[in-house]
Image 1 (cartoon, rainbow, N blue to C red):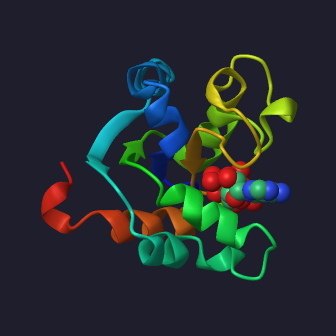
Image 2 (cartoon, rainbow, N blue to C red):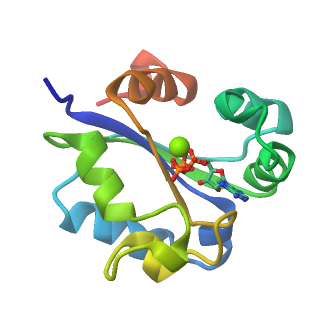
Length: 139
Ligand code: ATP
Ligand code: MG
């Protein structure tokens, strides 16, 4: 059965563009509610740990440099079928391929600087939520 939580990060490019408010409005308008949220900055080591699955990919260095380059907003979002519905809302990894009306189509600059992260499975949503939030930061 599909779970009801996913983990997002509003990435440093979108924070620099002053797009936090616009992205959160799209998230709320799509029916997601906030279970946990923080404004924070990852160290390079934390970004490497978060994206460890991509360690062997050629873009791993660039990705972890970028993700630790400035503040982000991390949040656990709640909704039925959260993982799949959120990935629909954010659109394809490459904004050039993202559908009209998706967050990445509107706010992303490139495949690297693509505005938002969304978990890709219920299992990873739990791992990523636990990475950012302790039990007493969830409501
Ligand atoms: P995310 O995990 O951030 O939600 P995603 O699931 O759409 O994105 P992944 O394949 O998991 O995409 O890649 C993780 C991130 O690595 C992408 O969001 C992007 O920022 C970066 N990335 C992926 N492919 C490339 C690439 N070819 N060049 C540069 N960066 C890339
Ligand atoms: Mg991914």
